[in-house]
Image 1 (cartoon, rainbow, N blue to C red):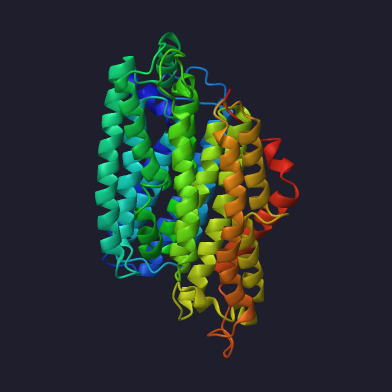
Image 2: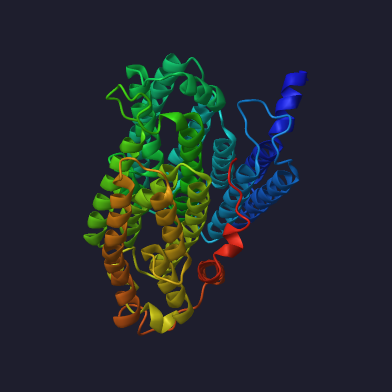
Length: 493
């Protein structure tokens, strides 16, 4: 084998392990498709996938986080390592939920695509070259297009996958065009060289402005920020719960982390006006406008929702505004706050989706009024739902409150000559009251209304209960003791 390929495999050992596990799971399912029962096929593919994730996690932990011997296009630091372990953790939760999922006959293909999507996310966290950024983004996107189309639990899954594919193709085109314009303006594709070039350049050229705007459009699609958010409600509603969880938690973490690295490393010198004699402004205002629009539209649209899945989708648009504050802070404090926030948000939204699935699997649907009477039959699950919803709303002492608090603190304390960040934080605090209203609508149904869960005795689901209780405990503990995570949370140098 060519020594260059051997070196590449050495640098990408965790990703290689996951690719091998995906191929083995797919091959085993293909061999036994004609003879084995669907349950046996699922158990074998699931076991191989879990084994691959655990092996990849061990490989990540054994890596040297100092970046020694790494090429310029690939990073390896403590923050990357932490994010990759977290992504694998979310993938394991998705695999656990998939045990209950009514998968189609494409069992091997489903687990193959889940692991391939995870490979793309791991590459996103380490990418410091714009071409690798694009390839990893599209690897994740293509996997999700197929996973949503394979989800036969909802008849509208094919329609949702087609919409997602069409909008994703447009965003991919914007991203690629933006990369080409940035390359034309700087003559570089890796983050460090772009940053060095930006420090030598005193003006923001028109080429660079177009490149930054186009790349922002592409990334805005990935993080569901206004006005690139139109796909989120349909996908959250039509995708199978494990896939929706994967998109809402792991994909958001990987996307925001990559977004933050590009802006705070590669394009950091252009955050504000770089030439006092010029009228050009930096990218800070662009992200501030995205954050304001996402905050307003996401919260107001969530009020009008009768579907709990769509409510979580619109609230995700609003949460994207909060996460952008960590990037706008443009310092290590903002990055630490961003990672903490995305972790606890992922826990809360994953738990909420698991309990939506509980309602759907017992004869209901995802409508808010389907939660009526939940506390009568599932008191423990209803209490977990309360913790998840109140954490998403930012109610103390839950983890979501401290996630927002640290983001607001990082944004206010960061140097901002425009003063716009202060008003963005003020608006975020005010809209938190709006978000509390629509989250309480779900809890009112679960605790104060009588419905389908009132009359009959319904057996408990051990998988959903275990996932919900574990995540609710994490949300509560990380809220009461946030420093347990923040003190150990690595941030890029």
